[in-house]
Image (cartoon, rainbow, N blue to C red; front, side, top):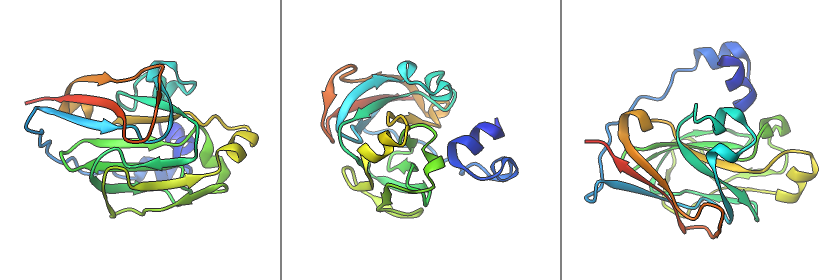
Length: 187
């Protein structure tokens, strides 16, 4: 598994194995008992099982969905705190205000670009609001470099906090802020 995280995020296997997981935050369900995550970019919604990266497709990193982008801007799908922000701009972790821990990963194997074509707009520890830009990237240059740009969003603490997950607009085009994922909360 450590080798996978090296490939996903960069660094050595030893670093990945020694990096502690972020501390779990108790889930604070919304009044309706569900958490809503909006589309993190413009594009076409893709069921997670349909993405080309097997770690995401299998749900090993958590349930969610992806977007095949039509523009190179990724935004926060909810209010929260940035818990992970790689300087390369290819991946972000956010703990939402109601306790979901999400991972957004721009494309697959894009860590290999070492930040080329990416301009991160936030850093670890920043508080973000729904719709705030996390990163801008040159979509066409990333594609031209041979990297898939499908961008998954997964809930990494779903086992402890999510009873059921619904993906809206699968197979349809969405704009930033459109309905994307509703997570019915446990408890």
